[in-house]
Length: 415
Image (tube, rainbow, N blue to C red; front, top):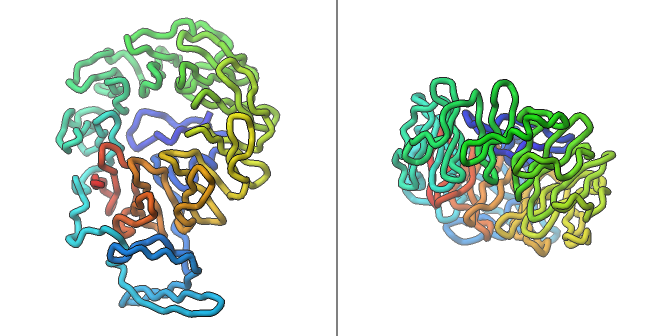
């Protein structure tokens, strides 16, 4: 089972065993936090389009040779019949940029780490410990815990005095500190460690004892997947299969790899090929692809050879396999890679943001973090920059805020 991209500094989701091609899911973003960690590349020659200067879009799709000097950046656009030369300074290579430096910050970069808001609260890491911020930026829970997860289903796993339990917003111990380790709730179940074995915890605090007695399933945090749509992928000595919320095996342990369900389908692997099954375990899309990713917004990214495209529930190609990498849709857009650069397509397969970025995250609340060189910024759905490329790392917008890193410290920016 793949890493879900939620492992953040000090968080409570341990790394999981990636499939041989799990980099296809994590490229251009994250992988231990949802942020790209790929090294900065030289970009002496690059495409530069859909960027605003003084709130006016520059939509050129020409190829530019970029020359940097102390006065600014000179772009020489080379085309078949014409040559255009103009100069502009870095401070103006952005649309909708605030005139006064720092105005974009909702909270200044003063924290060790800030996670995106989850159900109205953001996990914050400080020297004192882990706490939680409200949408207004104040502490709902002061930073006093050794480790902490996200608030899902109204509670979060936290560690105090070397034991894990679950608290609500009022810091009541809804589930007592009985566990050496505990993880976030997913679909009303959470993975917890008990007496050396791992099992699932219910929201009422009960354990899936049926699973503890099941010899066919390996009981560790890697072999037990997160629940989604009522089922969880699990691993046994003979392969992967699925259990229901009571811990019963309902889809046999017969696959070489298996991932969680999304929109009624789960991707599975056998004999080196990927396909999709339904919740009854029936193969609905043959296992014939070299790699596949989760169904999102009705479309399934698949790879044949080195080419990526999208199919529908019937296995019909709806966006041709013309990309070097293609990721699941979110908010009507999907990240795609052409050569070494990332852009975005819509559900018709049309490029809506040119592939000009060295890294990119999914859209969230209408905005996406993008990377140029070793710095991050944000674009809107029209591809217009909101800020200069100035952040060391960026993350998703949630509750109108996005965590960003500047000079090694984390703060929150506003939309």
